[in-house]
Amino acid sequence: MSETPTYRKIIHIDMDAFYASVEQMDNPELRGKPVAVGGSENRGVVSAASYEARKFGVRSALSGALAKKYCPEIIFVRPRFDRYKEISSKIHKIFHDYTDLVEPLSLDEAYLDVTQNKKGNPSASLLAQEIRQRIFNEVGLTASAGISVNKFVAKIASDYNKPNGQKTVNPDEVEAFLEDLPIRKFYGVGKVTTEKMYQLGIFTGTDLKSKSLEFLEKHFGKSGTFYYHVVRGIHNSEVKSSRITKSVAAEHTFDVNLSSEIFMMQQLERIATSLEKRLQRHNISGKTITLKIKYSDFSQQTRSKTLPYFISDKSLIMENVEELLYQEKMKDSVRLLGISLSNLNNEVKKAVVVQLKFTF
Image (cartoon, rainbow, N blue to C red; front, side, top):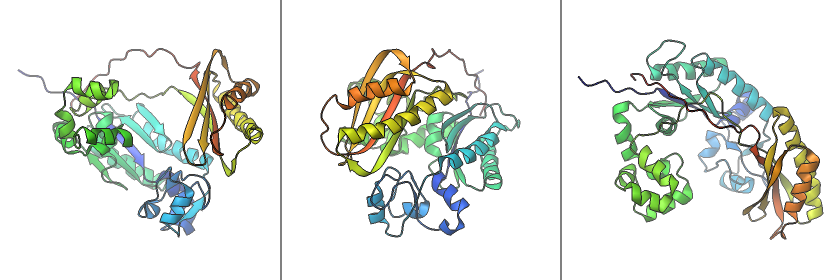
């Protein structure tokens, strides 16, 4: 007698245009209008765009100048991260009414493992629908959801019926779902990798599945192993209720490009002050310090240094940042500077956990 296959039940919740939606909720005058959070007509980068703005091609990471060009009627709004965190906290409280296995990816998205849940509901799809309805009723925002047997498929599925929708990919549908999927929609396959796959004749999941493990490892290294397994529906990463912070950073985009290292040092002092506060708030220090430089032509450079000891003090941060700044001459004027600390003292060896599986 064969055993019934067992699966996890994973929900990926993704808020719809979160930052922009919060701004539209708080300011009725913005509702129904194209809104960009962050950036400006002349400077900066868009952090988020409302769906009205997205119709014109405005997306996150687009320069403010291009956003204005694509959508002349766009309204730029300064980000209010304290407000976004406040709203996010309310949403996560709703999540925890259903399961303690909640893994935040950012303020506006998270994975939930509802294989065993506090409601005793065997249907992950009905739970996702209920969670989305509660978010709308209690917070006033819409969310989309993807439901499947693992995080990889759930993440892709949550994007299918946006905004304010959900998609379930049942266990017996996973492989066909992935085979039909355009390779650019595979989570973790960016623009550069997509182009490389196109050159190798890989345009869909079916094309990817036809390649051997040796072929994928040859062309994509360790990532090739990942691609080989996920296209077959194999992704055993667990939903982790607490995520270890890997780095702490602070950065700033300037209204006017900087061309003098003296002016840059003044700005880096302010950035280091912000970084120090963040490190102290979380009681974290790190060994690897990285200086991020974005030039006026939008090209980016990082310069890093690893110390034999942990630091979190502003004076020690600046001492090393100054060394990195003068390490080589700037190739152009600078529009953004950032400082980050990684190799943190909170990184510990991960315990091996066996995740039980139950009937879907």
